[in-house]
Image: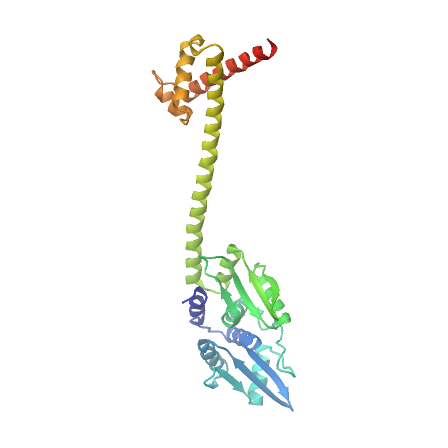
Length: 306
Ligand SMILES: [Zn+2]
């Protein structure tokens, strides 16, 4: 099962108790998966979804709201033709009638005035037209709407929770989407997809740890490069001194230091100090190697001017 359908399963099991939330949920279903149209004075509501669970949920919601069991056909269509019932549904959900069955209404903000109802609308909209990518692959959540005005009002509704989504047109559809992990977490929270949210957060932590390890490895590599380039510079200085005056002309402690540096070119200062007898601290090693470099520089200066 996909990550999306897992979340939808969780959201479908959400039970509404207040009439207000039921109305908001039904409004989302009709606006996204339904058509309302009037022809020859007769209004019809048609609701269709490829997801039989959503149609079953619609039947339950309508039953809870109006104490009336509507029927669905084998192809997951709900057709309502009772005029009195239709006007009751439109009044309750704030969905507008249209003449051509094609235009969805923007969200009636009176129907979603309470926070619980805003959440119910977004949750149901996700069931109708939402999808989310498997966070193992990438972060992406979207609502695919066929009406711009509705998509825009959905975007504004979601923005009321501080979650800013974007809209893009794709094949005659309007896609309200977001790619930011933090906002996706917020949105899952708004929809009360708590199990999905936990899973998402766990994965983010694992990914975060992995990123940190990578960052550390890169950092180590950078440090290692620094150690090596310092070592190369020191060894060049030692070779220069050896060539010009011979290491025997160095004070004993510097001579010993120079020999060990050349013997262990990739050792750190601390490691070099441990190889000395008696052992020398890191700063002692640093001091001695600097001294050798200074001597080399001085010899080069003499060479230049001499
Ligand atoms: Zn409510």
